[in-house]
Length: 291
Image 1: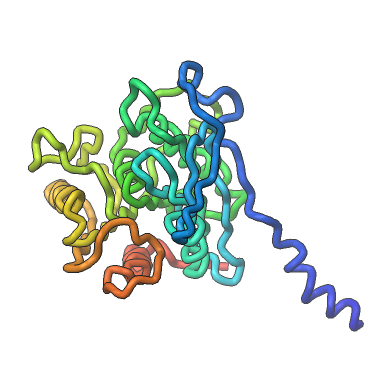
Image 2 (image 1 turned 90 degrees about the horizontal axis):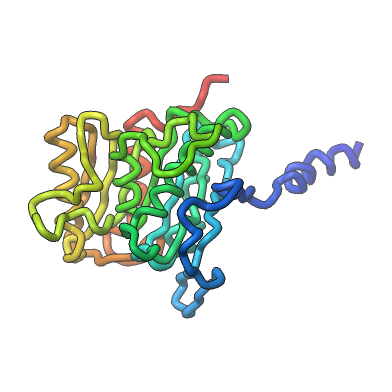
């Protein structure tokens, strides 16, 4: 009897495997033939930020929500880094841990960096993001997630990537495979200090690659007033959502710069995860499925 009791306590721990990592592309990565990218490497500057660069083999890593908390919702996480590196810890793995705590399965996206030559800065990352959304939806039954409650959360350049994948018309720039029969458009978005949303040539407009319209999924945005390079882009995005009569929530904090992610900072903006979680709850995204 003691052995059975011990097994009952230990077995769940033994079965809790490492997070599952899958390649986004089974064959050649689209558009990489003529690109010269160095070997992928990790950069650690002892500042609490783990950075990845030279990503040529993009992946997703699945962090399932604990069974006793799982709501069925899932979120793909896109770290920032100027489309040059990926801030993989405080804008990646740490975010996945928080999402798991509120019952959301997290999928960490390792998209291609740095920017590809002779292509728009977001061209390769958008391909990776669209494939990631379709791939996650194809795994919905296996991963016990609701394909109609799949969100996308991005920081800085990852926030720009979030905006582009949310506002796309579903068309892709790569050869379709069976997995691409699933929609590449998420059901909601969370943009944290998103970059590059303001058109530099037309400062009162969004960039062309973010065409907000009546079909854009609901969004939550948070940015600091002191984030002078990007705060106006968040405001423009909110205005476009409001004019398109789409659900949107924007928080602009008086204090708070750029790139804080999940760091423990004294400013009120550091409490953005609770605000985002409350928004998801209010949008009925965290309702646990009936047994």
